[in-house]
Length: 148
Length: 128
Image (cartoon, rainbow over all chains, first blue to last red; front, side, top):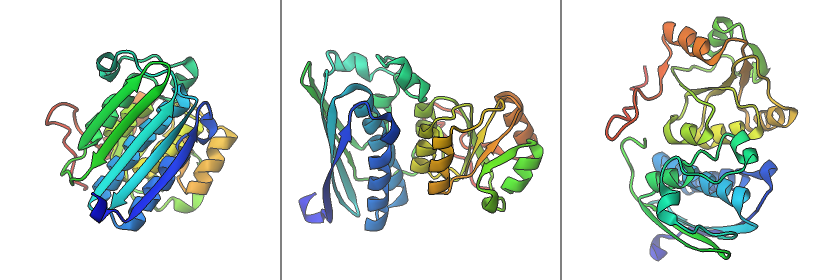
C-alpha cells in the first residue's frame, strides 16, 4: 500500500451535525477521481465513506476519516469517539438498528449501514469498545464487474 | 428518453435543473430508504423517492444519479433545492404516487437499474 500511496489526508466529522452529513464523502470522492482511480472503485469508496460518515453523525460525538489512496488501492480508516458497539455480530446483521427517529427521517437507520460498508469493501475490519468508540478499516483494491 | 419527456409523462414541475432537460435517461430506482439506494442504484439512473431532505441530494451525488423525481407531490426543502443547484442535480416533482410514477415510466421504456437483488442476481441491465 505505502509505495502506491499518492494521497493521504484526514477529515474531521462532527457528531450530530446532520446538515453537513455527506460533505466529507463528496470531497473524498472528488479526490479519488482526480487521482485517476477506477470509477467502480471510486463509487464503492464513496458509498462506504458516506455510510460511515452518516454513522458518525448519527451516533458518535466526533470522528476522523483517514484516507490513503493510490490509483489501485484505497484505504479508509474511520475512528470515532462514541458509545461503541456492544455486539458487533448483531450490529452487522441487516435490519438491526438503534437509530433515532431523526436518522430514520433522513432515509437511514434501517440497519443497512454496516452491511453496506462490508458489502462494498474488498477488506473490512471493525473493532469497538463500549463507551469509547468504534474503528473501521475498509480497503478497496479490486475492480468489480458488477458493483451491486 | 430525455428528462423533458419524463417531465411530460409525469406532469411534473422542474424545481432544479431546467437547463438540463435534454439529459438522456434509461434506468431508474425507486426507494425511500437511502441505504437501499446506496446499495442498489446505479450511476446515471433516476431516483424516484418521497424523501425531500438534503441527504437525498448527497446520496445522489455520491452515486452520480442523473435526476431526482420527488413523488406524491413532495417538494424539496429550500436547503435541499439549494444543495441540488450547487451540485447540479435536477429535481422534478410529480403528484403521482411512487407506484404510478414507476409504472408510467416503465411503460414508456424506462427500466429498473437492476432487475432483482440476491446473491448473483444484482444484474445490471445493459444501457440501452
